[in-house]
Image (cartoon, rainbow, N blue to C red; front, side):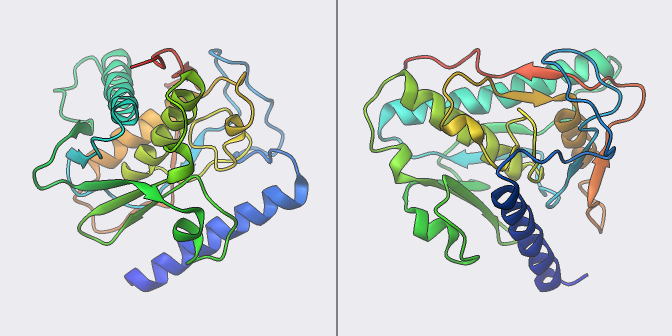
Length: 253
């Protein structure tokens, strides 16, 4: 499949799920089972959210991210998000693959030297979504085959330095870093990869990684040299579906 064709398919998919969310005005479940039950937080489920769509193979295992230094509170929030992904990947591998050599994870880190990811804090909603003609977005991740760009809406940055600002930016950055590692959009779940990002307006919500996300990331690392990218990665029967609270590290810098 050519790059242009693949990009067109991804664009159509994103447009489809956005329209679906708007039309239903509800959180439509993205699941391999139409009869799946809504899972409770931090409990096992064998029927829901056991597949995640995949965007691409990140070509590098060590992913250096150029993060704007100012404002300092936003920089520190991004570091918290980076640390959260690194910590939970390591914990997942230690739990389910105790004999792993430690190589089957992406290692995210902030850098100013030859970054794989360039993050911007001054994007506008129109900048982020003009290519697809969608409503204003909180952020957008793109990949040109060599480097990722992550545009964060300036409306999330040009705000007071307080707990609410930290919370919203943290969740959005977690979502975009998931895209950098190859995870696609989900619908109808508290997972941070939820496209609707309902927690943007509901500050009482809790956001989670899932074991599906973490398993998919590990598989992407293993398959990074493959010539094709899978459309979906499915959670195997030996690993229970679980949600992992990722709000616990949010705090004032």
